[in-house]
Each structure stands twice: as structure tokens, then as C-alpha cells.
Image (cartoon, rainbow over all chains, first blue to last red; front, side):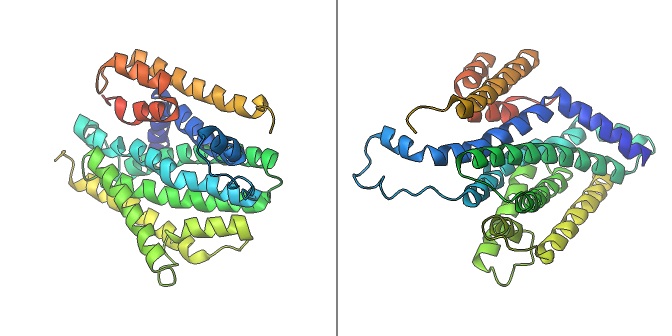
Length: 256
Length: 63
């Protein structure tokens, strides 16, 4: 346990030095507040773009605050996920190619401790970014569109965070095995395949982690309750990823 | 919506500037980058959100 804490501390110091602890949250805040802003100014933006057919702007109706907030969270599912996955891709692959893993393994440090510390550091960045981003988006949405249900918002953001954590954990697993860019590619591919499979067969696959984004949006817009299946399967997926990453690190210490 | 509400747009601009400044500080300290440094300066200053994200994700070479 003490090893994990020391390694976690080192990881957080590293992400502070590389400015990751600052720029990822800032990007998430910008993404979050851009959604309500562009929605609010959409008529102006369309007018400024010049070639709007007459009569189109009369039909424009401002979407409700809950819908805008769900869209803002949706931003984190695309660009946000890309940023998080690119940030985690080198976390184990980089250590393998630079030889730090061998140095660590020469000491009595369990591979599981290395991987858990990395994972916890990624979770911290994710929580900071998503928390600040969702708070910023919620503030702007309240100012521009109207009041939001804060309990629904917290639950919806939490569900979204769990889905993002699944993608991060998958990338961490691939990073224990492949080079960085390949790990990011496979991590994104796995997440995309899961959500594609879920959108094709929603009734059959509504227990998978990919259902989390849909549940999050429904909770925001319709106030629907929690579904435990996707939460449990997401938890299992994350644990499996961390455990298998530890196994890979133990076996395959040299790059390539 | 007659005038621009700077109270709402202002923070967005401030965050964009902050992001570019952090990027430039990081760039000035970086020993190696992918591609020439002067190009990244231009991308960071004029590239807005995506320029900074590009620099932080693929522009730096991890040592």
C-alpha cells in the first residue's frame, strides 16, 4: 500500500510537471462552456455565416437546459475521450521503452502496485477535468438556458465519467503490451466498437458499459433512474484491465 | 441578444489564452519536439483550442 502511495505521488508530480494537471481540465472547461454558448448564439452565428435561407431562423427554438447539458457531456465522449486516451497511451509503454520498469522491478515492487498507481493518477486527472468541466458547463447552461436539476447533473456526470474511465483503463491495458500510439488506437477502437455494438443492438447489450452514455443523457433529459447492469459491468471491465495490465508488465518487461 | 455579453465570452477567451500561455511555457522548456519549434509557436498562438491540444498530445516527445 505504501508503494502504491509513493508511486502515485510520483505520477502526480510528473503530471504537474508536464502541465497535464492544468491543461486537461482547462480543455474540458472550454469544451463544456462552448456547448451552451454556441447553442445560445446559434441564430447569430447562422446569420453571420450569410447564406441562411429566409424563414429558417424563425423556426429556431432554443433547446432546454437539460438537453444542452446532455450535449455538453456528450462533448466529453468524443473530444474528451480522445484527449484522455492520448494522455494515457504512453503511461506504461513509455516506461517500458525508457527502462524505468526494469529498474522498478529490480526492487521489490509488485507490478500491480505500478499499474494501480498509474491508474489512480489517471483517475485523478479525469475527475478534476470532468468535475470542473461539468461545473463550468452547468453554470453557463443555468445562466443562458435556465435552471438544472443538480442531483440529476451529478449522477449524469458520474455515469459519463465511468464510461471515460473504461476507455482510459482499456488504453492502460494496451499500453502495458504495445507501443503508445498503437495502445491509443486500440483503446479508442475498443470503445468505439462497444458503443457501435450497443447502438446496433440496444436491447441485447444494455448491460454493457457502452450503455452508460445513453443512460447519462436520459437521466439528464428525462430524469430516469440508475441502471445497475452497466455500472457493474464497467466496474468489472476496469478491474480486469488493471489486473491484466499487471500481468503483462510482469511477463513482458522488454519493449517489443 | 443585441450586444455581446462579455461576462460570458470573457472567461472563454481567458481560458484560451491561459492554454496557449501554458503551451508556450512548456514549449520553451521542451528539449525536443515533433517538428520545428517555430511552427508550434504559430500553432499555439493561432490554433486556439485544437492547436493547444495538438501540441500537448502529439507535439512533445516524452523523454
